[in-house]
Structures are given as C-alpha cells and as structure tokens.
Length: 150
Image (tube, rainbow, N blue to C red; front, side):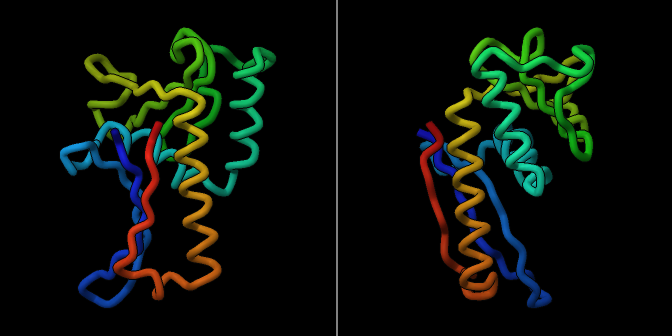
C-alpha cells in the first residue's frame, strides 16, 4: 500500500516550504509517483478544477482532444494525456520531460494512473493546501498529513 504524504518542512535558513511525496510499504520514497503525478498536481494546482473537468470528460468517454498528437495538459514539461495511445483505457498518463526516466524520450517510462488514484492524490493535496491556508504554513511544521493512494 502506498501512502501520500504532505508536510511543511523548515529549511536551515528558517524558511518553510510544502512537500508532497509518496512512500511504499517499506517507507522508501516512490520516485515514479513523486516525479509524475505529484509533481503534476503541485505545478498545475491553480488549474485543478479545469483538469478535473477534463478527466471527468475522458472517464465519461466524451473528451475530444484539441490535437491528438499533443499532451492534453502540460506545465513546466510535465505532461498529461487522457486518451490512448499514451493513456491506457481507464487511466491518465503523465510524463516528466525533466527526467529521462519518466519522459517520452526513448527509454523513458511515462506513468499510468487510474482516475481514482488521480482524484485521491488531488483531494489529498487540496485538503493540505486548505489546511495551510487556514492554519498557516509555519504552524504545520513537523506535522505529516497522510492518505492512502488506492
């Protein structure tokens, strides 16, 4: 079972920053999930409602891409596909072109996530951002907010 973790970390200079990552049963970070799904959610969060809408359309079978040769959404070289051939049926596909390992380049392995996984990760990140806004980032240092990734 993989766990999503959101927390606020304090840097040596005293500044704070939020972090979103995933660990496996062994407690080790899951770089594939962190460098694709979670990085995509962090980078594209201001557009989360629109992305949710597109995912719902894809899930319902009514999404029509503007250009099937391009990713359906992208930010800072982290790209999302909602339909085949990149996304498997019932999944979204995310590639991170900043890492060779998860890129669309030869030898890269873009990652597949179910709609349920996407929604669970987005819900977790959204709730944590709301908590930061409500309680203040500085007040969350040392507290981990965890959820299961289905």
